[in-house]
Amino acid sequence: MNQAESTRQINDSIHSWVKPKSRVLDLGCGDGTLLAQLERALDIRGYGLEIDPDSINQCVTKGVNVIEQDLNKGMANFADDSFDTVIMTQALQAMRFPHLVLDEMLRIGTQCVITFPNFGHWKARAYLTLRGRMPVTKQLAYEWYDTPNIHFFTYSDFEALCRERNIKILRKQFVGEHLLDRQLKNLWPNLFAETAVYHLSK
Amino acid sequence: MTSDISTSSVGLVKAEKILIETPLTLACGVVLPSHELMIETYGTLNADKSNALLICHALSGSHHAAGVYADDDKPGWWDSYIGPGKPMDTNRFFIVSLNNIGSCYGSTGPTSINPESGEPWGAEFPVLRARDWVESQRLLMEHLGIQCWAAVIGGSLGGMQAMRWALEHPDKLANSIVIASSMKLTAQNIAFNELARRAIQSDPDFCDGNYLQNNKTPRQGLALARMIGHVTYLSDELMGQKFGRELRSGTFTQGEAAPIEFQIESYLNHQGEKFSGDFDANSYILITKMLDYFDLSREYQDDPVLAFSHASCDFLVVAFSSDWRFSPKRSREITDALIAAGKNVSFAEIDSDKGHDAFLLPNPRYEQVLGNYLSKVADKLEGAA
Image (tube, rainbow over all chains, first blue to last red; front, side, top):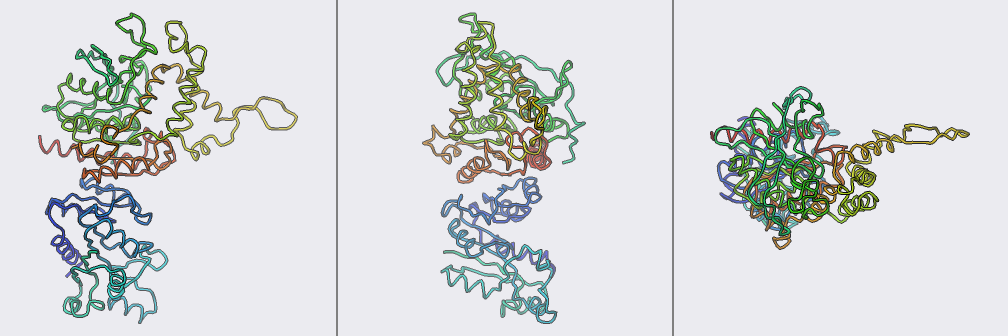
């Protein structure tokens, strides 16, 4: 299984959790691929927030609604419960205050879908243990000094945070590329899932 | 975008005077039995007349938005953005640019003759609202046989018209492109406009607005008004970079008494002087008031979300980082209201040090966003044709 396949699996989960014709806000929407797919498949009214000019251009080219906004500066401009689903894929680890972003997502959206790389995956653990260096993997492809990923956390860390903040985990799905991962990801996700998708509510 | 600003011009253009014979009832109640509009068009209208863009000018704009005249090689005010391969691509769109009523570039306004008195309207020209411009533009649209604009586009006051179009005639435009604009002016913004008006009115040659009848022109006042405006359209950074504390003449050397003139003084005076020869003082007063009075959601219980719920077009909102006269915050308010109203909208805040004037000037990112958006609009039209 390759990266495209795991992206497909993640997207399948998101598609099955988002309601048709609902309002969706995608935080850090990148080039707008996910929103474009959701619009086509589910006729949603979607908006993406993004700060990268090239990504914004690509969204505009795709005809995806994109709003230039820095998530680290807050989202006070969005009213409580103004969206059915707020999505954040692979960006929580790059936020200055992930717990506050999570609170904001659940304030703005009735439900949230969130995905992030698992720093507890065995490859990352092995990298750190054996090499004594911060992991540089396909998913976390940066050196420690220039990485946008400023918070490293595992699924166990994330679920602990959800418990602490009374966030309900409605559903979750684990994704792994490696054969070993695919066999063991559901048994021991914190070690064998590279990426997980969480479906949350208040 | 691969547009080449320097070479892809629409070339020679000609202005045209259109007589609108349908009476126009203004917001103030006055009826103009007929009115004249100076217009320019670029590109070709397609068979089903669906590829038309309407350009809405701002305070001091004219119908001359692109290309050059045979006897004047000064390009139109939005020439960087209109032309073959440019964001407003004349290979794909038919672009309509007009001089709005109340202005002074040949359309009915304070310098025209009031048919009732046989004298120039002068200060008697009826008070205007942005909606009057939109209504006059709608009559022009009818005259041209266009059913629906592919997009209505404008910066500053032009953006206000683009928004008003979306609320007043939701079925007559597919896209509204709102650049460096606002749903209403701030107190500070109104204050700058009042300074400008007071400057004009204080000129002894203003003659209470009847200067034409007295063969006078309040050039000093108009120049000062423009100088005030001009300062607010630039950013501190840009002024610093462009002029700094450079001297145009004189010296600070002790023992020398030559008068000192900073470059910025000379520049501003030149701009004021030039403008006061081109523009009409009554038009300046009229149109600054139009800006002040504009309040998008006044008739919608002061609720921008309710206001925009009447729109059915898609929106592109663009702001510039160093614009403090129409700051990015104002554009964010527009965008947030559109999102809350469930409208399709994209928003880009373009990094620029050029202040409010940025919307007129070349900027690669601005060109890309506008170009990509309009290219998508054209794709849709051409796909449907």
